[in-house]
Amino acid sequence: MSSSKSYAAQSATTPLGPFSIDRREPGQTDVHIEILYCGVCHTDLHQARNEWKGTIYPCVPGHEIVGRVTKTGDKVSKFKIGDIAAVGCMVDSCRECENCKAGMEQYCVNSATFTYNSEDKKWGGITYGGYSDAIVVDEAFTLKIPAGLDPAAAAPLLCAGITTYSPLHHWKVGPGKKVGIVGLGGLGHMGVKFASRMGAHTVLFTTSPSKVEDGLRLGANEVVVSTDAAAMKKHAASFDFILDAVSANHDINAYLSLLKLDGNLTLVGLPEHPLPVEAFNLLLPRRSFSGSAIGGIAETQEMLDFCAAQGIASDIEMIDIQQINEAYERLLKGDVKYRFVIDMASLKN
Image 1 (tube, rainbow, N blue to C red):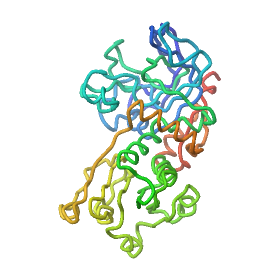
Image 2: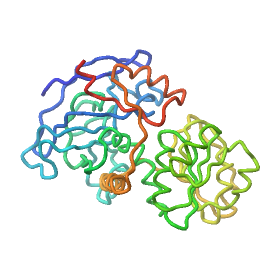
Image 3: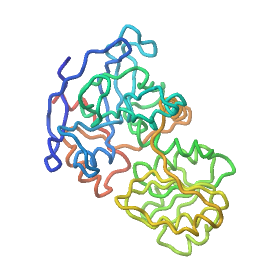
Image 4: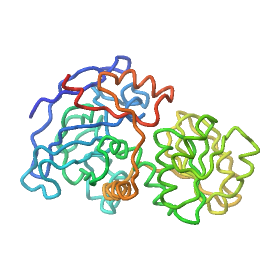
């Protein structure tokens, strides 16, 4: 074991602060990563404040991790010392169930081991995340950051990126498709970038007129202010696919009615309360409503490679770890364009 510096929440009501954690020495297939950057996901705030219930304290959040490999186990073949590597939302799974064998470890029947606040079935204890100076992960759950991707701006791709890429990829978004993205936040801004680079006619829906210009800058062909009934009606029954990235309570039926025959709306946001769905909005004309969670390891690597080839990265605001509690308050207000990333060098201060 080796001691690592981190920032942890000690309870649901206390601010995050310095905390020492133990990291295991690398096993035969493990890589030891010095963390350089860690994105701040809204999930971190939910978990730190126990808003989803079940948080185990102390809790060290962070699952958008980019760093430098400093040690490798004897059987590691994917990485060498000095490589820039990444860790997303998972650090293990059973690897034996049907879903794992299909490369969809995020849907592991026996539950994936998540990067933090998760039971570590192999090593024991609870996992600690990327608000720390180092992490040890099996190479099978470690990603390669392609050359040309800015490491800091790549960090949010490990959650916000794959969360939006996976459903767009699954539903075969591409040229000739009309695609809607609902909400322009940490997830939505990546959805706009991906859909437009995949060649789809991309329409952003936002409640904020102030975001119209930014939506166009990010790649949307059109931006619709969703409170404008006439603008919404103009797009009735015309979309092949809609990605809903909104976590606040909202009228899902307003967007289901925009789907054409066999159109799909996939929810990746996490509203606090259930969203009422009108049956006729699904029955006529044969629409579907689904959800999606992150992506498997192979698909996440595919996403990173796509980003490198297309010049895609997250729009970020860099912060020091000492600013994390302020960042959480700003995140609640939507006061970030569009993802906070922690410079983990500040943990040494």
